[in-house]
Amino acid sequence: MEFLKLLSETPGVPGREERVREVIAREIEGLFDETRVDAMGNLVCVKRATRAPGKGPAPKVMLAAHMDQIGFYVKHVDDKGFVRVHNVGGFDPRNLLANRVLVQGKKDMLGVMNPAGKPVHLATEEDRRKQYQIPDFFVDLGLPAKKVKELVSVGDPVTLVREFSAIGDYACGQAMDNRAAVWVLVRAMQRLKRSLYDIYAVFTVQEEVGLRGAGPATFGCEPDIAIALDTCLACDTPGIPEDQAVTLAGKGVGIKVMDGASISDRSLVDSFVNVAKKEKITYQLELMPVGGTDAGAMQRSRGGYKTITISVPTRYIHTVTEMVHRDDLHAARNLVAAWLAQ
Figure (cartoon, rainbow, N blue to C red):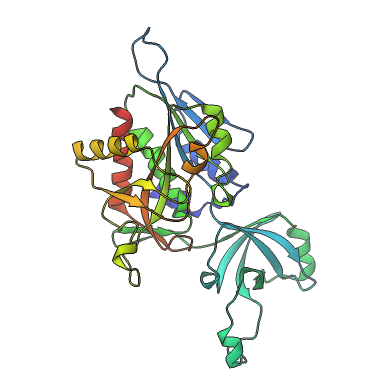
């Protein structure tokens, strides 16, 4: 899990994924026939098919795993040195109180995030009932205002900070959405010995702000089949009705039927199910009424492509304590590798 730990703890908000891209590039060195970074910042890696000469062009399969995590950009530094931020990606404000953050200015600086308001000891009953929104929050860097203004500029990225840890059978940390799927794609490609496909493994940017990197990447690859790799909601914790459960943690890789941004090609759903059964890989069919993955952009690029999402069930998505079951990680890796090898 050392690679997953490194991925989880490396900051990369939408539009500033370069540190994550560098971590991936080091890990995959020598694995692909071609690698390039496109104008959007997507890392495009190509592994050519292993097939006899004269067979004609191999079909192209594109797999996309987004590198970015939800985070913030600095929007203002006040005269006391407190930093206001604008979110990039969907946060639940309830999860933001009393968090440590990393402000990536002229140097990396730890800070703490809290909402503006009175300490609890001074708060009135009305104060205590207040529902905080993201604009209420500020970052305290513990430095004089002059120093903060020297080191921090509008547009600097800010991420929440939490160390990766093993908790029972789970890996827990920040940015499992979507570093868990990045791990799956890298490990599946390292596991793959041969394939009849030209494989385009693409580590995409800006998924959390509207699937912005995957569309141009798909347009450039022109695949016959497009596969998004992402996390999905694990709904096996208290308070979630059984009939609303999208997937269950520890019960296998998710094979997506549909979500709010795409409907998977039925022949691809059947194909992945058949491979999972043949290889005795635990899986679950996934239907999520809202949200979406890079598949939504891939499916609608150029003239349209046959598309599916393969998912890693994840508890507490869009918090700093996202949890993935190790068995589900391995099932996702094994399914992707087995499908590509067929």
